[in-house]
Image (cartoon, rainbow, N blue to C red; front, side, top):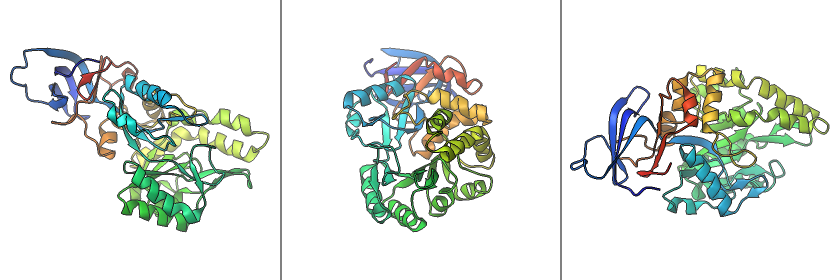
Amino acid sequence: MSRPGVLHVKGRVLAGPDDVRDELWVVDGRITYDRPVGAGHDVTTVEGWTLPGLVDAHCHVGLGTHGPVPAEEAEKQALTDRDHGTLLLRDAGSPSDTRWVDDREDLPRIIRAGRHIARTRRYIRGFAHEIEPEDLVAYVAQEARRGDGWVKLVGDWIDRSTGDLGACWPRGAVEAAIAEAHRLDARVTAHCFAEESLRDLVEAGIDCVEHATGLTDDLIPLFAERGVAIVPTLVNIATFPQLAAGGDEKFPRWSAHMRRLHARRYETVRNAYDAGIPVYVGTDAGGSLAHGLVAGEVAELVKAGIPPVEALSATAWGARAWLRRPGLDEGASADLVVYGADPRTDVGVLAAPRRIVLRGRVVG
């Protein structure tokens, strides 16, 4: 990792989808658009198409297939994201304490949602707090204080009594829990594959829904009216057929439901976008999925019918604004990625960053 100094970034600086500048400078780790005095001395120059550091708005650092992983593995996860140009992570639930990452200048920034909150025996073992509805408000308050402005609920999961996906929480419980999170200045998101839980969660005031494969035409206007964002995680939804095959014998209703959700995944996302629902990039990395998949998720959004610039914004300018973090702003920390071609016309270039700058240092 290079020592911090004066960095000159030139070519095309995409400060916004239509805000294109010729250059920026990095001095003491921060962005300036004013040429610094004496910049001719000890200057490193990087040239190309520059974006703010990419965002993965749904991942899990410190989480593996069976639950929490050692710090060494969590470090590898974070470094993998960094080396793919993903410099801001919204950790959508993890049982691991990753606060130590904040002390590492070579690792991406993390916005944490605390640990998942699930109904008893209604989620992956070892991932979540597993509780009953009467304890939901207390656990939401706890995780709101532990997180960085977000709380993560498990909104639905397989109900073994019915053999299909089912809502986890009664309406009154989620209303009280979301109100408590908002009182503590935290936003709430929820894992939701199916249709059943969505209306109650949105009418209760939820801020975001993860996956949202159950979003139907009758629910889309409600999401749009309330401004509820979705993070589709299409690279994860691609695994539904494999998951369904594993449940054919024991849970045939669930398996058939998962296949239906998978079959209409692109239509669901396109209809949401067309209705004005905010859509952001998330991969669900961690658990069973590898980190470093943001470029693939952006490509999936384009395949679903979202215009390339809007899909790019979902991991760049728009995502950072939604998460209340700066982009390529004057005075902001220099977290940026440089590419060899214009990512607005070919999102495929996201898979091959030319240079990665984190906190003003060239790290890749």
